[in-house]
Structures are given as structure tokens and as C-alpha cells.
Image (cartoon, rainbow, N blue to C red; front, side):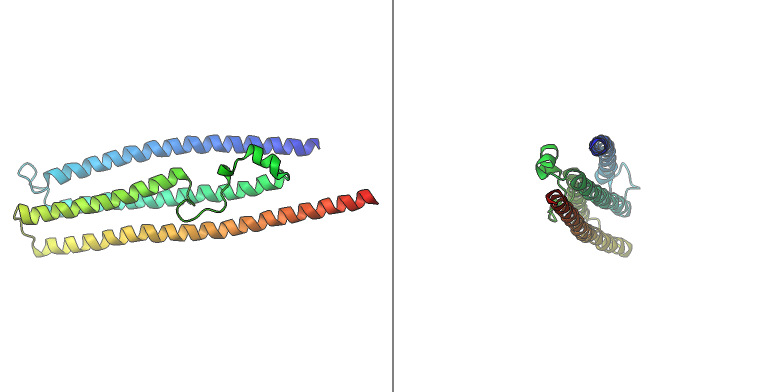
Length: 230
């Protein structure tokens, strides 16, 4: 009995330590992401404002499209990174959930310590990522779409308002830009669906493990009852 109690206390300490480490990591990631986005939008905004201007004649439409491509590409990478980190966090939660079920045989006792909010089970495609990572995923994706829209607006402004016609080279760059950007945006949705599929498979495995734990516990309790009767 003492050994079991020590194991439970050790598990609680481990989970508490892991929770603190995850919180610290999330704060670090949050600060890094925010600083990165501010710097990215700062550079993009500068090129956006001075494209095709007399002050910076080197900022032509090709440079602007290149800067837009880099900015949207970085945002795409960050959205994919949010997916990866969020899925990894949820996967670890599933494993820890199995450990909890194995240690806390009494469901009432477990629910007193770990509320339903800590459960990584029964998530759909909209919330299978933890809120922190899900927020950043949508932030980066919306930023991608936003930069794409204002890039189109700027190009239209250059062509029709400033009467600056595109040459063949510009047209090819513009076509490639939009094809690649559309692929970027579509890929983030495809990868989200792929990670959700991986989560569902992991969750099914987790449910199987929990069922086995409950079944083994019932068998053990049944044997104890039979033994006590004898």
C-alpha cells in the first residue's frame, strides 16, 4: 500500500513538473512568435510602402513579390510548426492519460484531481490541437491570407493607378507567385487534416489501452472476491 501511494505521489510530482515546463516553453514560444511576426510585418510593410517609389527605385514589383513570397512562406512554415508542436503536445497528453488511468483505478478519485478539461480524448478537427497552438495556427493562416490579399491590392494599384505596365518577366513572376501561395495555403489545410487523422489513430490506441486496464482491473478484483469467499 505504501509503495502504491509513493508511486502515485511520484506520478503527481512528475505531471506537475511537466506542466510547469510546458507552461514555460509556451511562454518562450509565444514571445518568439510575436517578435518574429512584428519583425516580419515591419520589413514587409517597409517594402510595401516604398515599392515603385522615387525614394527606393530598387524596390520594383519583382522585389515586392519576392518579399511577399518570403513573408507568406515564413507564415506557412510557422502554421505548420504550430500543427506539429500542438499534435506532439496532445500525443504526450494521451500517453499521460493512460498512466493516470493505470494509477488511479477509482474514477471519482481521478476526477477530483484531473478535471475533464485535462482530458485529451474526444476532440474534433477544430480543437484537437491545444488552445495555445490552435490560436497560433489560425493566426498564421489568416496572416497568410491577409498578406496575399494586400499583395494583390498593391499589384493592381501599380498596374491601374500608377499606370505601370508589367513586362513578360513580371507576368511570369506574378503567375508563379500566386500558384505557389495558393499551394502554401492549401497545404496548411491538408496537413491539418493529416495531423487530425494521426490524432484519431492515437486516440483509438489510447482508448484500447484504457479498456485493457479497466478489464484487467475487473479480472483482478473478481479473483480477489473469489479468493476472499474461499
